[in-house]
Length: 147
Image (cartoon, rainbow, N blue to C red; front, top):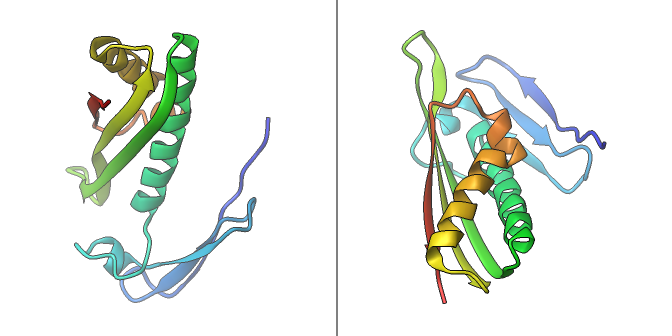
């Protein structure tokens, strides 16, 4: 199986330093990161580990959900998946991710809303990124089949 690589170059202290995250395997982008922007309400053009986790989780979930829908005989026309990753204080000190909220809206042929919701939940439980994030306090799911 393939291995994917990202690299971060960091200069300075946590609170005054900054870095760049490079998507090394694909070579498609390098993004600026900084702790002050990470902990702020506004990102200000700087990404964070949480945003990168959100990107990984939403895309992985969409792929897994699409596969499971196909296995059930349904035809996914369009899936719109959002992952909100929250950074919060850890009672043991430092920070943690207490919750990730997945939201999926889909247009799918050959399925009813109840079955769509059941498959959506299975996708949340079986998506490789969901599995990797097992230490997250809670991963919620908001599902709606749209016509």
